Amino acid sequence: MLQVDVLVVGGGFGGTAAARALEQRLAGRSERVLLVASENFLTFTPLLPEAASGTLEPRHAVLPLRQLLPRTELIAGEVVVLDPAARTAVVEDLNHERHDVAYRTLVLSPGSVPQTFPIPGLLEHAVGFKTLADAIWLRNRVLRQLEAAESTDDLRLRRELLTFTFVGGGYAGVEALAELESLARDAVRTYTRIRPSDFRWVLVEATDALLPGLDRRLAGYSERQLRRRGVEVRLSTRMESCEGGVVRLSDPTMAPYPSGTIVWTAGQRPSPLPAQAGLPTDERGRVPVDEWMRVPGRPDVYAVGDAAAVPDPDGGLCPATAQHALRQGRIAGINAAAGLGAGEERPFRYRNRGLAVTLGKHQGTAQVKQLVFTGPLAWWMGRSYHLLMVPGLARRLRIVTDWTLSVVFSRDVSQLGALGRPSSLDSPS
Ligand SMILES: Cc1cc2nc3c(=O)[nH]c(=O)nc-3n(C[C@H](O)[C@H](O)[C@H](O)COP(=O)(O)OP(=O)(O)OC[C@H]3O[C@@H](n4cnc5c(N)ncnc54)[C@H](O)[C@@H]3O)c2cc1C
Image (cartoon, rainbow, N blue to C red):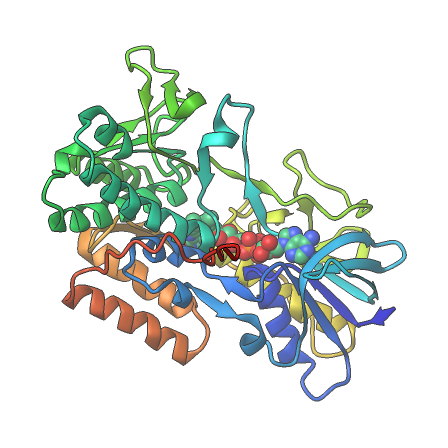
C-alpha cells in the first residue's frame, strides 16, 4: 500500500494548480503528494484551437507535469476506485497494473468529458475537440481533405470532402471552426484546382445566440465575423442525425447534406467519478463544495474545476473555465496544506475578470468586466491573457516565438496524418 498525505486526482488546470500550491506550502517538510493524471502533461486548452490551425506548435500547448511539479509524485494512469470513507484509492497505471493508495487528504479535479446525446450516426461519424490529439487530428484532417479534393474530378465528392460541420456554438466550437477556416483559407492558395468557394463551413447552435453566457455584443460580433467569412451559422437549430455522414438538421428549410467532417462541440459534462466514490453530486453530476473548496461534511475532501459546483462570489455557481479551475485548485492546495499544519486557510474569492475568444488570424473578441473589445486589439488581448496564464518563462518564450513566426511566415501546410501510426513491416517473402 502506497501511503501519501495528499492524493490529487486529475492533471488538468485544477489538479496541477492544487499540486503547485501544495509544493509551495509544504516546501522543506516531509509530506508526500501524489498526483494521478491520465497524461504526463497539462493540456492548455485555451491554446488548442491555435495548435489545430498551426499558428502554434502543438507541443507548446502542453506543459510537462514532471517539470512543472518537481516535488510531486506522479503516476500516469487513472484512479479507478475511490473510497473516501476508508481514505483509500486504487490507481491503474499505463501497464494496467493496480496500486493501492492510502491518503489523508483528497483533491478531486477530474474535469469534464464531451456531453453526447442519442443522435443517430453521432458516435460513428463525429469527432470531439477536447484534447491535443483532437487538435492535431483536425489539422491533419483539413489538410488531408484538401489533398483529396484537389485530386478528384467529381465535383459532388469534392464538395463533400470540403464540407465541415461544427455542432455547438460555445467557445470551443466557435474558436475551433474560426481557426480551422483560416487555416484552410491560407492553405488553399497553394492548390490549383480548389477555390475558396468549394468549401462549406456550417456552425449549428441549439440556442438563439453563439457563445452562450458571453456578453450579447460579443456574441453578435463573432456571428457577424463568421458570416462575413462565408460560414453558415444556424442558430436555434439542432443536428437530428448524421447517419452515413449525411447531416440532417431540425430546420426543415435546410436539405440534408453530406459532410466530410463533423465536429461535436455541444457541451461538456463532469467526468464520471471513480467507482465507489459515493460523494454527493448535483443534478448535473458536479460535486458541491463550499468557499473553502471542501465537500460539506467531508473536511478531508476537496473538489475543484469542471467537476465541482463551486459558489461564485458574485452569486450562483462558477462557470466551467480554465481560469476558475486554476484559482479553485490553488485554494484547494492552500487549504489542504493548512489541514496538514502548513500555513493558513483561504476562502475562494476570485471574480471573473473577463473572457477572450479568438476568431482566427488577428481577429477576436474580449470582455473585461463591463468593457468589450473586438477585432485585432481583442485578439491581442486574448493572446496576452492566455500567455500570462502559462507558467514558466521558457514555455512563454516558445509560444511568443511561434506567434511571431506565424505573423512573418506563411503557415506550414504539410499533412502529417500518418504521425502516431508507425509504418507496418511486410512479412518475409
Ligand atoms: C477546446 C477548448 C477550449 C477552451 N478554451 C478555454 C478558454 O479559452 N478559457 C477558459 O477559461 N477555459 C477554456 N476551456 C475550458 C477549460 O479547459 C476547462 O474549464 C478546464 O480545463 C477545467 O479544468 P479541470 O482541472 O476541471 O479539468 P481538466 O483540465 O479537463 O483536467 C482534468 C484531467 O483529469 C483527468 N481525469 C479524469 N478522471 C480521472 C481519473 N479517474 N484519474 C486520473 N485522471 C483523471 C482527465 O483526463 C483530465 O486530464 C476550453 C475547453 C476546451 C475543450
